[in-house]
Each structure stands twice: as structure tokens, then as C-alpha cells.
Image 1: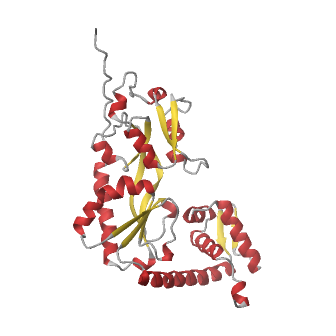
Image 2: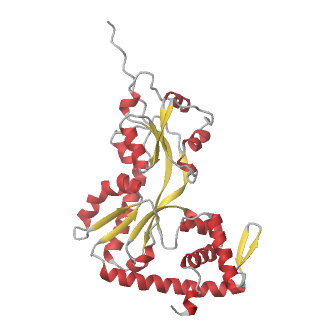
Image 3: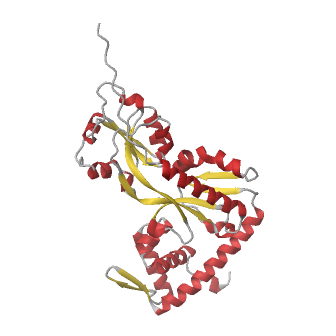
Length: 325
């Protein structure tokens, strides 16, 4: 390897610098790249040390590129875009035909898959491969054409199509609420129930935590009858469907189950998430008609879902009374 190539900074460092320089925020860049803010800050410091120049001026609550940083950012952005295009071209020429979609396990199982027949009826000649994985996929690699990502609005990449936001509200199976003593008329009644949790040991998703919903609805100190924790959100919902407890429903992910009566929303109090779902097209796929058709279909389905998502709260089914003997 040529000596100059060996001295090049890590590609991860350059990607982190490009994001931080574009967003002028280590926090937002870290969220976009799915790394911690401290890890990104260390990468930038290591890059500055390797180059021997300051790339950013760090002020209180503000970040700015130095003159050297601005020049370097222009060059790095152009080089990364060129590298992404080259990789996409090579991978696109060799991969199997069809549309590759990347999204989270829960979004795939609760929203995409139940609606895929609708897309197939519109575009029967387009083969769709759904890759459901909660790890971030690098769209520049060329393996994926479209990604649907769960992001804060502020860090959504340029050109991303916002499908919808998200609201949280308790949901349970009708069978559970028919049991004696299982009434859910007000938030305090959750003390009688097992609460179903999405496991979040690092506390990185507080908006999906029961504690946030309870605090927002005046029950910060509530002690439930029990708790069950699951690694994936679709597992939480499956446990709710089985009557094992009360879940924190994510509307519109669970709207179809609410409309079908498989889950009920005992009271209408909601907790708004600061994030939403965005369709992001890979650089190599932006001109493809099948990809454009898929994104337009997803946008239309999202618009339709938003009209239906405001499901009225249903009264909890009356518990069955024991027959007199």
C-alpha cells in the first residue's frame, strides 16, 4: 500500500466529520450515525490531532467550522459522494433485480407486511425484498434501495420523505379487560395490571417507556401489578394480543389492530413522540421508477393511515359477572 494511503484518516472519522460539519452539531450528527455523542466527539478530536489543525470552533451551545474545516469539509463531502456513487454502481450492477427495503423488525411486521399486497396490486412486476433488522444499514453500500427509518425530524437526511409521527397510548386485548377486576377507566387503574415493556437498558428511547407516559398523565409513582419485558416491540404487541398485560401502543403502528378490535384503547390519553418514520432512498436508486413508485405508495398509505389513525377510545368491556347459584 502506498505510504500516503496508509496515512489517510479512518473512513468512519471522515463520515463523522461530514455529518458534524453539515449539521453543525455533534449531538445531531451522532443521532444520524447511530453513535453516542461522546464517541463522535472523540473521533473529531482524533481527526484534528491527525491533521494538526482545528476543524471546528466550539462555543457555548454553538459549533462552527474553521476556515480550514470549511475547505476540508467541501473536499470530504465531494469524495464521500463520489465513493458512494462508485460503490452503488458496482453493487447495483451485480445484485439481483428487485427492490430491497430495509426497516426495523417492528415496522416491517406491524406496518409494511400487512400492506404489501396493496403495493403488489399496483406494481405486480416489482419484486420486493424486505430486510428487517434494527441495525443501521449504510445506504451508500448499494445493498438496499430504500430504508424506512425512525428519526427525530431535526436529523432526517436531505430528501427523506416523512411518512408520519407517532403517539403512545395504552392498549390491551378485549379478553383481558373482560376479566373481573380488570377495569381500565382511568390511568390509575393500571396499578391492577401487568405492564408490557420494550427493554431499553441504556435508556436511549425514553419516549417508548411507560414511565414517560405515566408521568405525562399524572401517575409518575404508579406501581403496576407486574411487568414483562421484551427485546422487540412486535413481541410486546403479541403479548398484549395474548392477554398477558397492557402495552404502550404506538399509533399508527397498532391502528389496524385497534380498528379490527383485536386491541382496544381504554382511554384516549396519549403521549407524543418527538420522532417520526421517514423513507430514505439510497443514492444509487434515486432515478429508478420502481423505487419512486414504492415511495409514492408508502406516502399514500401513510396519508390514508393518518386519516384513520385517530381511533376513538373504546370503553373497556364490562367484566363478566359470576352467575348466581
